[in-house]
Length: 185
Length: 245
Image 1 (cartoon, rainbow over the protein chains, first blue to last red):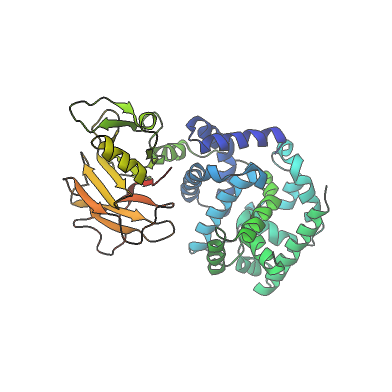
Image 2: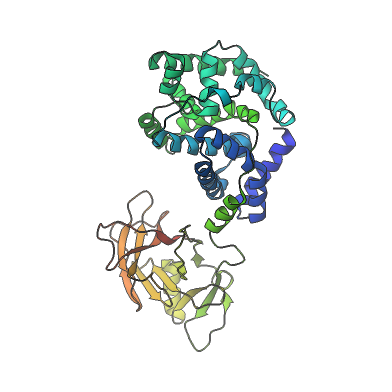
């Protein structure tokens, strides 16, 4: 996300907070496809992802006034609403994750060579670097949880390890990420 | 933020907290600044990952549904007028302009699909000083909310000096077989009923223990005779914050 795009999203959110429907629609057009994709990837049910997206944008409409640009980039705020909502729904439904490895991209590769490279260059570099310092399969655990919504149990099954081991891997990875990111410019 | 606390925030953002822990943690976010900050930091740290997800165009009906669920547009939003107590001289003047000491709370019809009740609620808070001024000068004032030129549906005036709530239904209509119930909502507390809305004007009392700070009024759709549980059971069709100078 480059600075201009970020500033534009910020303006759209702030206008939405004032009830500007034109801005809200632009916000939907700009961020909707990304948030839909993030949600769809995790929930893996198109109709459900559509319902979630609808709910997410109504939440954005209602809470746009609480967005503070000092608190973080606008895309992080939008993305969190979508991911949180999706994971809430995912965790509450009885979910059987069938083996889906075949259509799972190599997320680490993809981060190194992201889809929206231009937009992503600005702030993903440090994160990519720091993820690179985490050993496999702990790194994949973090990425599968983030992109595919894997729970600790699902990761335990995937890697044939006790749930506690997964928890330890996740904690170690997240701590390492935090420390590494702190040292990045 | 302690390390275990920070890791819980990290796992919450990542999505790997087990459901019960997730719900428990989520409940803490609104009231704990340190937790909220830790969550925000993790969201900011991890969100660049989303750059690797290829956008997918959602089908057009999603936007249509979002639009349909929004509260009425500003253009369609009720116009507020003060109508002088003298009904023969209904000169409409913008309420906010002419009676600056009065405040009209914004109204938000909640997004309730399938419930098309042509009702509006005007909520007025009249401060004690204003009451005496009014009493000294002339008769009463009512405020009406008109929607698209229709008659106002409901007029609510809260008189903080006497603790009375004047409710005057004008063209309010409940769905067939249902009643509309008025609720006083103290911030952070359970709503207190003010009774079912009838067809005739009536005076209700502000519920005991009610405080005006951050309070609001709400109207819900209930079974005939009102909610039997003491709490709103049906959808809240209108609500408005009480605002004071």
